[in-house]
Length: 192
Image 1 (cartoon, rainbow, N blue to C red):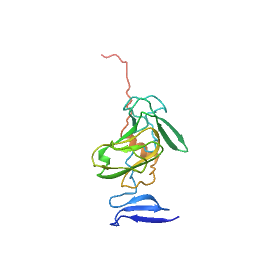
Image 2 (image 1 turned 60 degrees about the vertical axis):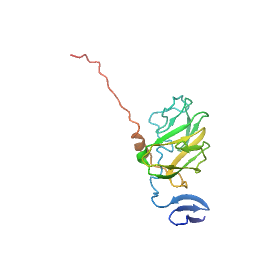
Image 3 (image 1 turned 45 degrees about the horizontal axis):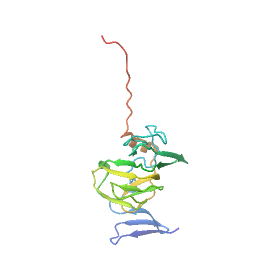
Image 4 (image 1 turned 180 degrees about the vertical axis):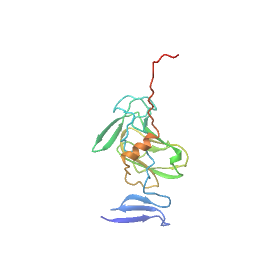
C-alpha cells in the first residue's frame, strides 16, 4: 500500500491518497469530524415507520429527513446493517439542509449506488463528481433521481472522502430535531 499527499500549488490544500486514489481532503477550515452535512445519510432512522414501497404524496417524508417528490414512494432494504434505497423512475428523493448548518464554500456530494445526484438544482452527476458553491446560511436541497442510493455524504471541498458513519444515538438525536411525536389525551368528562 502506498500513502501519499497530493497538494495544490500553495501546499495548503489537497488530498491524502492511498494507492493513487484520493481518500481524504485537507486544507484550511476542513475538519475530519462532523464533516457530513447530510442527516441520516445511511437511511437508518425511520421514526415515522415508513413502510418500504408504500404510496406517497408529493413532498411526503419517508425515512427521517428524506422526502419524495411524487406518489410512487421508495423501497429500501437493509443487509448487514447497510440500508439501500431504490427510487423509482419519475420520482426523486430530496433532503433540505438547513442553512444554519452550512458555511460558504465549495461542497462535494458522494454516495453509493446507481442514482444520479445534484446540489441546489444544478446538473445531475455521478458520486464524487457533483460539486457546487453553497452560500452559508441558505437552505440547500440535495436530490437524487431514479436508481439506488446509500451512504450519502455532502462535505466541504472538492474531493469526496469515505462515508463518515455516526453512532445510532447521534444520528437519532439529529433526526429528532426535525420530527416530534405529540401524544394528546382526550377526556369525555362532562363539563360543569
